[in-house]
Amino acid sequence: MNVSARSELASPAVANSSNRVHTPRRAARVLLVDAAGRVLLFEGFDPARPGHRYWFTPGGGLDPGESPAAGAARELAEETGLRLDPAELGEPVWSDTTEFPFDGTWYRQEQDFFLFRVPSWEVDTAGFNDVEQRSIAGHRWWLPDELAASGERFYPSELPALLTRLGQSTAADRDEASC
Image (cartoon, rainbow, N blue to C red; front, side):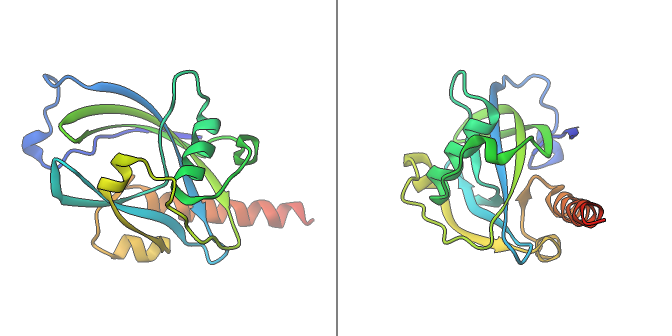
């Protein structure tokens, strides 16, 4: 598992966060990838900064005492309608720590990413909570190269490279298994 530390700060002027009070948060996210190799991302915005739009993976904050896999499965069901047993997600494929503002609060979020592949999936957002309804404008399936070349803002910024690496390692694992 790769672990990185980074900050999702909007500009160098904001980069000095040493005096900023951060709300700690644990989260779990899902890289939901279809048979064409596309990842599902939501287009969202910060209610306090509606012009700051970005794409992000399904997932969110963990409930008290909730494991990352259980939180990822719960969030996936709420945000996409896809219901899984947490064990189906396996182990996280990547983890990082990020700092970001949302709706007037600064967060320092430790998050685990799980990879789950589907042949295809029709996204059902009926389970969105109030905040998601107010801050998510839509969703789209992206190819890693398409995302990297889009000029769009997305999180994590390493996402296209991560997806490419995971796709290659998964293919190599399948080839080794067939010998």
